Amino acid sequence: RRSVAQPVGTLITVATTGAETAKADAPGLPTTLDELVETARRCEQAGAALIHVHVRDDAHEPTLDLARLRETVAALRETTDLIVQLSTGGAVTDPYADRLRVLEADPDSCSLTCGTTNFGDDVFLNPYPFMRELYLAAREREIVPEFEIFDLGHLASLERLLGERGLPYGGRVHVDLVLGVPGALPGTTASLVAALAALPDAVTSWSATGIGRAHLPILAATLSAGGHLRVGMEDNLILERGRPVRHNVELVDRATTFATLMQRPPLTTDQARDLLQVRP
Ligand code: KMH
Ligand code: ZN
Image (cartoon, rainbow, N blue to C red; front, side, top):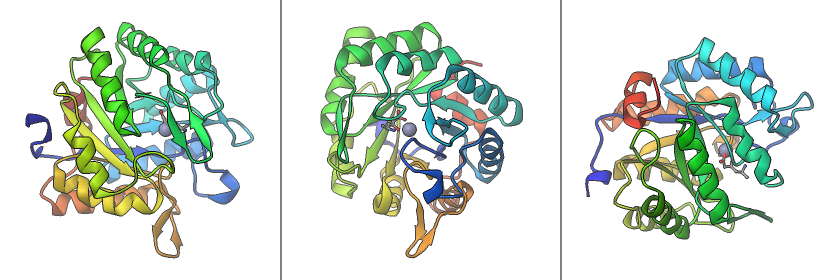
């Protein structure tokens, strides 16, 4: 299938922060705007082209505060050429209305999770009507969605959404496979292969990330299968056995090394913008 042919380069996404890890447990987690901007600059230099952003408040707790989101988008645009993707997933406790309001910060891209999923001891809620509302609002605002897939059924919901509502802004369909969340698709090559077999035909590019210990196996399998890479401290806090990640750039550096060895060096930000057709 065309959508899984080996691309010439690799889109490297860095998911720097997430909503789940406490600053106290990972001091290198960028939770302030200054830390995020410094991280973004270094990760761009190291080969990242897209940044997936969750913001924190002054107490380092996750927040969807709109002013903070706007300030963050502006700061990242001013200091980097990275594609700025805001999370609409937030934390599992965030209300739908707050998650929809994220779009008002006007990022280049937004995450859009394609269904409800187990999330460790929690449940991450994404009923179809919410998904559809987010999708239509993103298209209205010319924001390119990245479809987050945690479970196989999410691919069926994505197919339904595209069938009922047509293509997103820009006409491309980029999927990110999140493998290894406890209770969702396991972080195995078998899961990756099953997800690829179920990709809707409209998908034009895909990336994958392995959570925690699935990080490296999924990274290697993804490059082998022709996918793009997502790395970062949102997904994985251990660089190697017994060695915590100190800075997101360590994970981007390693992804760049792997991708380059595989003859698929990192896409530039311009190439990534072209791939995803984010608005100029
Ligand atoms: N924090 C998770 C509940 C996303 O960014 O869209 C959801 C998440 C997915 O991280
Ligand atoms: Zn996220």
